[in-house]
Length: 414
Image 1 (cartoon, rainbow, N blue to C red):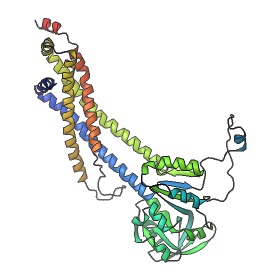
Image 2 (image 1 turned 180 degrees about the vertical axis):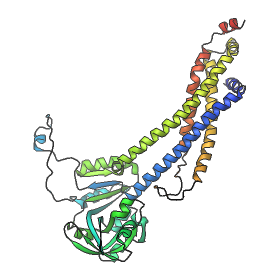
Image 3 (image 1 turned 135 degrees about the vertical axis):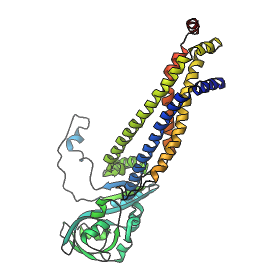
Image 4 (image 1 turned 90 degrees about the vertical axis):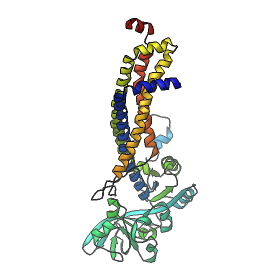
């Protein structure tokens, strides 16, 4: 094997210019792959972290995913029966046996649960009216399933208990209403209940939909405002391992019968966009590596053409077809390996260069710079594809070299 490596290195070194061009082609493909993947992965990771921070991992709602089984379906469960257009039954909205379900959820290792009541309300301050969604919470439990306390810029969650009918709102909503910490607003629910509520906290999440139209009050206060005493319509669940949200949500839905949504289901459209982004990224960088692979194919084919007499001599010395094929395959792998190493270095320099870029205004992602992921797996994947494409490009000329007949080569030369 050492002899084959020495021969392969000698053949490549005699064509330094062509070898350098091929290696640079692979290196640029690897570098662009690393830079683009770092940008994409950085933004996607940041977005998912923001979603996970703001939203619970699992939400149990006071509704069902599908209508209850109808009589004809129960009578003939195996029959060819299809029921459509089932009229929803009138029932009091709210999660039944919420306390029992909370006990079951809190028994799950690494899980924290909180029951809430959400409902619309009209906030009135002076002559300004704004419709918001009020969420009734228990601060001690809600702190475990949400990072709202981290987003509060004035006041705190515990201030909800220190004031009668306390209310925490977003900073954008405070600007719309023209209120400040300590002001009193009038909240009116669709049931006609009216309460005077004191602004005891202001938060900023960076999500416009929350900052402009969300408010938080004590659970008991919101139950009074919505005229729904002792009722909760959602149970929020936060897990230590977010990857278990989807399978656990399906298990809970089968057990409780309520509609259970994971954070992945609630953001499925956005996560699908990420898949499309990744497909575009792999297609573009794959095309660059493909062009580089053609360069390797070209140089090895040229070497095979120029070294036909050498191949005949090697076979006459006892080299088998497998040895000859391995000789030229190793040349392609060496070119790909050198290109991968150089590409990783250039890619790291590109990442560091992008990290120095600053914008005059904040981006939609909430930062004044590129969001970059420095992940060793990106470098590993890029290097693997580079070496693999180089090896595949060398297969055809290597097989052609292995099939050359030394007798015919010697006769032709004579």
